[in-house]
Image 1 (cartoon, one colour):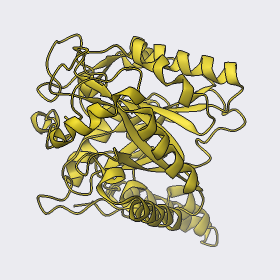
Image 2 (cartoon, helix red, strand yellow; image 1 turned 180 degrees about the horizontal axis):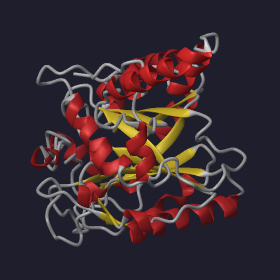
Image 3 (cartoon, rainbow, N blue to C red; image 1 turned 180 degrees about the vertical axis):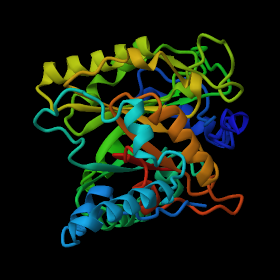
Length: 371
């Protein structure tokens, strides 16, 4: 089924906000550089393993010596014929171990969110009802729904506290080049600050997400230092919409980031942490194809930056688990994330995966995003 997994299961409707062009352009004075119109581009049942030979041997301790070898022999035969545990893709702990999990990364610094907490985030943009849960509902309803998801996760895994988050698309890929010719639009500062206020109201952290289009992450990232210098603001980047190398329009082709790009971003975040005396930054990289991230094994881990490789595809549960196994588990970085789409995951009649479903994965995601 690899040909199916290579399909771009992301943003089903590209460029849904064309009616907002004029109003957004009128807001352009609020931002240092804005261009164009906004757009967006059956579980296997675990079986209890049979007792080990050693367990059977010890249970036979009261058996006469002459019969103990027979007991042990029968136990060994039963061990060989006992059915093995059946795992869905992405759930097999042995596959995760062979792939290199757990990763031998830097020890968490004071103030780190991961892995002591699990982040549960709502993703989107307040100017679009079609780009994710963050903008689909009015603010109060959106925060109430997020609170409900946080409670469900806390009940599913009481051992790990849940940190709510809002994940704002702060630079949105465009279908047209715009005045800057970059196929992206930077959200007005007022819009970004508005969502930051919502996050603070909800006791949530904020992620800003950058879709570069034909711009360079090295140019765009410093534009957000004014926000990233806050201790409760973190970062996400989206390889799907990094298309400067191919020259293709966002939405017509899936983009990519190389480890060198990711290392630049994590180095930038490290420098901010040191400059402003901040706790470590969480850095989320979306991924749902093989080429979405190239040379992943060359990604550098830094104590000041907590890297999350985030499975971002949509589809049936089996397809999402396959993608998680192939593109996240098979190429370990540091931490893992998993996205759930309220509409796209379920539009063909498939169920939305539950916290209990995701907690069967190995490694367990520590960042969960709802779109």
